[in-house]
Image 1: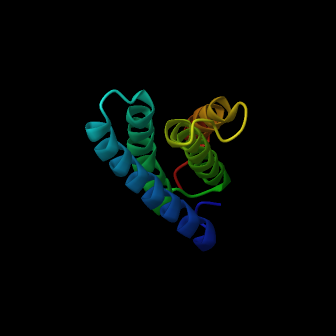
Image 2: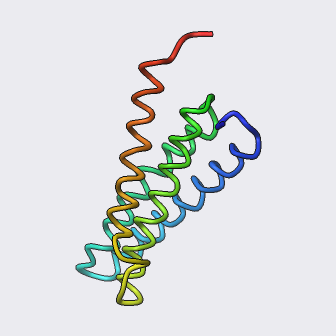
Length: 121
């Protein structure tokens, strides 16, 4: 899945978007004072963006494709929910942050499975 060109393009686009959101959130947090939401968005995006970049460039197979989708969607939902809480005063939808968190964790666990099943070609 991640080896598929269209999926790779989407994963790389998500990596860029998430990385940019991380940098912007870090910059905003440095000027906003005590914003736990902005700091959390920055930390999550700046750690998951590079992982998605690596998965988009080097990941091959259905498991790593699934991991990419879970991490990208989870990060966007989680960070989006925190951003909405910060700037609008309410979240995306009830339970959005935990759902996004489960997506990210699930993506990392799929990477564990892919590593355990990996065979050198």
